[in-house]
Image (cartoon, rainbow, N blue to C red; front, side, top):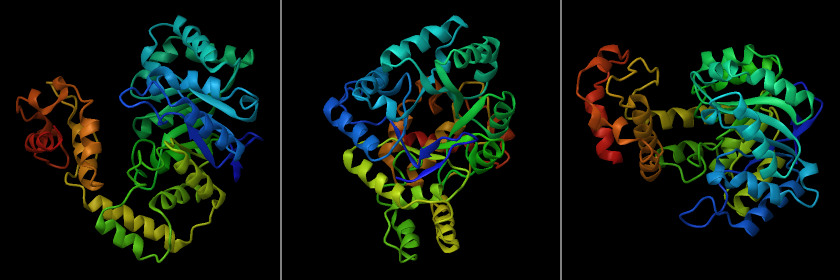
Length: 377
């Protein structure tokens, strides 16, 4: 296993981290993990040198932390840095911090969380948590040794990311969605560099974009890959792109089988900063362009169309529609769409036209929403 610098700390992190969020489970019930298979995967990862394990309060229907507490028995807990996350959406008062944290310690069968993250910061959550006294609470938990380091994961836009980084000097790590397709999405490449330059470790989640960059690519994308003459799987291309960058401390992968785990470990063992050639980086830029050319809606996600007076989730629906077309992953797009409530779907649209008046791309949003719904419903 290769190891990399982790922010300003002396500790070295494995190039590959293990996210306990897509583990094998009983069909129809993701909270019921296939215990023996999952435990074998976690322990094989640690025996292979993985030393960063990530989970969260809500993963696998709340079963991820409990499983991981059992899987790390027998000395495995002492061989890793353990990260879990505070479910920000569940916080209604300052009293909730200790209540949830103590529950997580019990689930994980530990007395210390090495990296305690605010989960999926977005919009007003950071300000609300500050108002509830989160920073003071976390400083107390760090002082008493129950939390090793304060960190956060992020799902919003770049200006908010920069503000959060700058507003607290105790941040040690940021977990961001980052892959060769999403260089301008959410925090993006600029956010990664911004955090790195301020001494934070950066952990990249969704390196394979939920598996979309790991499977068989569309024919036009495959032709671009084939131009390289290099025998490398799409997943390995995506992982090596991340490990090529000094700003990325660790690539966090949610692996679903022992075979995926073994393949990713093998990729990590070939990794290193600056290992890709200029030609290989140019090739992945060309792959990005080819995928992007398949996007049917030129929506930039600027959100100028929001809020919709009827509550329609305009940019979210258009992004799901684009995802299905770009990656030829209609089933995946329909799965994402299934989580959009009826009250937020195009059926609630009254065709008032306010969104189209505000759209800098001059999109016919009303018609595009109809088309998206027809394809996704």
